[in-house]
Every structure is written in structure tokens, then in C-alpha cells.
Length: 339
Image (tube, rainbow, N blue to C red; front, side, top):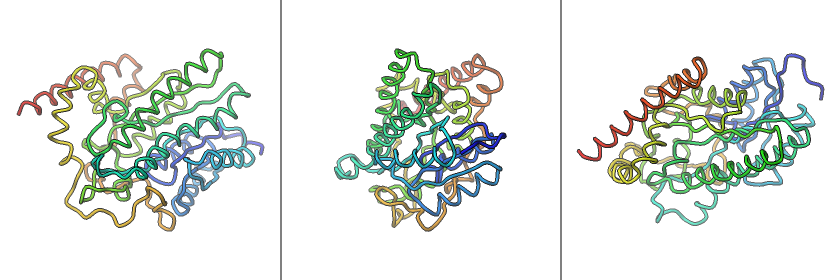
């Protein structure tokens, strides 16, 4: 397919029917990209497709489970036939279980790993199959502060996010060795207000919630698109809380052990019944669109000063804010552990 002159390129977003993926698809469209949306939920996908098209760019919705490598390959073939060569591939699909590890069934753990880790591996492999022969393209791995520090009750998700970091480091080094101009970059997020807490599988006896502070998915989306357009940096940390988590784990991991042992349950549970349906094995947005936002609009922040500084004032200003945020965060953790 010939591109419309105004289209900057073709971007693929996995997990695009809701949450961060949904907001990222909109931001890419706003920036002039044709967008292919990959997810399992038909209603969410179609609503996301309409939102992308409202920006005047082509869109394609493709139902696929990212844990199925053949399905991801087939989706890419459809996308390139309809929209053209893929320039940007964003891996952000999510499905998990929040529970004590000893109460997480083997099939639940394996499924969360298949989506949150193998889904990224499959997306990366498929993206590279198209990008390497052209010697151009960007792959964005959407990660989390929990890729650096595991927290109680999210062993499956944290394990997968740690694995993505190691996998990406390996592939990035291989590409550098081969002299490839394809870029891999990572964007590590704070807690985000998405529908996942309305449909994630929980064995906590109550409905779960993101660990404060919470940010709107548009904050994440702007950071992801910025990374796609500026991929020479290996990774981006979004929000001071992410920086504090990363550096707290680096310099005071045992202190974090004690702090999280005391606070992790209350910070992730709210006084409400768990959802009747979850999306671990089957999509919840097959017949109903949930949109990008979750149930925490009242507390979610719409701006990350760290990300704004990074984009508008350069790396030096961002580093200064990051250092300040880390110092404040580690100090707060230390006080919490002592009180």
C-alpha cells in the first residue's frame, strides 16, 4: 500500500485495546503515524481503531494473542500488506495474576509469563524479521519500575519484566555487533491508571489497585512515543517514583525488602470485591470497550515533571531531577522502614 504523504510511518502497538497501549496508539496517531493495533478484545480494538482514524491517519485492528508466535507473524504480514513496512513496534501487551506466589497455580504463572515475557520476545522477533533487511526501525519495550524491583504478590509480572530487560540487553548487543541501524529502547513506567485493575486475576480476596503515586496512561504514552522518536538512549525512566525504585533497589535492597513486607499488601488492595471476570486467559473487552483509563482518575497525575524535563530541557535537567527524586524516595523508604 502506498503511504499517504502526511503519514510519518507505520507503527504497531500490542495490547492496544486498552490502557497504556490504547493511549500510545492515540499519541502515535496524533504524531502522524499510521497505526496497527494488536490485541485480543474485539470491542476494545474497534474503539481504538476509530480513535486513531479520527486523527486522519490509516488504522488497522488485528485480533491476535501475542503469546502465539505464529499469530504474531500472521498479524505482521497483514499489517505490512495493508499499511506498508513497519517503522515502529511497541510491545506493551499485559495479562497477569496478583496473588501470593504459593497461591498462584502453575498454569496462571505460565500464562502471565507467556504474555508479559514471551509476548515481547515474539513481537521483537517478528519486528526484526521485517526491519533487519531494511536496516531501519525502532522497537520499544514498555517496562516498569517492577523490572528493577520485585514486589510482593506480583511475582509473575515482576519476573517477566526482569526477563524482558535481560533479553533486550542481549539482542541490543547483537544488533550493535552486526552494525545494524535498528534500535531497541526501553520505557519503564510508574503505576498507571488503566483498566487492568478492573480485570486482572486476583487471589487477594479483594479488588486490587496500583501502588501510589499513580499516573494517567497519557503520561506513559507521551514517553513511549518520545522514545520511539529518540531511540538512541537505551532506556527511559518515567516519573520520580520509578527512579526512586530503581536506585533504592541498587543501593538499599534489604531496606526495600523490609519496607515492602510491611506496606505491599495495603498499597495494592482496596475495600471492594474482586472482579467476576479476568483477562488472564480470555479477553474481557471482547464485547465491551473499557478505554484507556481505569478507576483512579481522581488521584492520577496528568504530568511527570521528570519526563517533561527530559523532553524540553535535555538530559542534564532530567538527570538533576532524577537524582533529587531518588534521594527523596530513598529517604522516604528509610523513614518508613524505621517507623
